[in-house]
Length: 227
Ligand code: ATP
Ligand code: MG
Image (cartoon, rainbow, N blue to C red; front, top):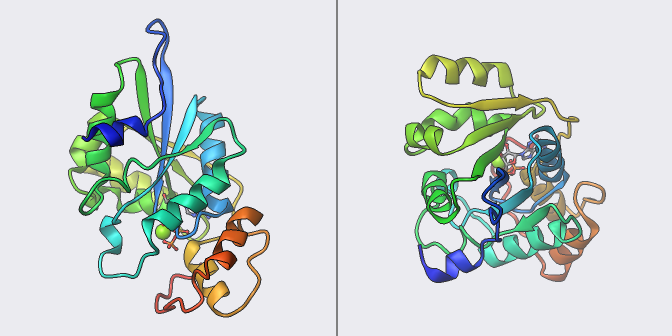
């Protein structure tokens, strides 16, 4: 871990006599939207998190070979969307790391960086938790963080629960039901490309950024999961 990467992490854990609960909201955030915001906010409340770090992936492992917007743009939009919430922070931690982004590397580095009294919670939606066992070093991840799995329209969280339980891996997953928002970045990109409105799907400032920088105008809409 470089000194620069460490410098981008917020201070936490100073009072050794108490536990600090750090949420990590990972994603591509291409772009960030209200589905992400609601997931993080409800996870923060349900698990009493002190802070949620929104961490755009530098080069997402599951999106290799797919066109992904420049990391600086995705980070800038994440910063805009989270700026007004004192319990949210946008982090450069993963975009400043070279190579493919694996969550296990992030968790190992965060664990090494923070003192023992900082507990890590990795926040995901139901689609991500369904795939969890296919992530690199899943067993290692299970030892490093508690997972929070939020419901997401179109995905079966009970199926995820069964899958993880059957794996025998020591995962600690907290399942939370959140207000259903059938919003996806894929759908937002497709809407922008088609000249349709994306108002009320994400923050006004994010929409302003998309327009100002001409993002997604020629978005290649070849995926079918436009939920
Ligand atoms: P894309 O369509 O490009 O895959 P996305 O909308 O799925 O984008 P990601 O950046 O892939 O967004 O997701 C980051 C995390 O947020 C994942 O854990 C995902 O499950 C969760 N998430 C995204 N949208 C929602 C939503 N509407 N409700 C609940 N969780 C969500
Ligand atoms: Mg996704």
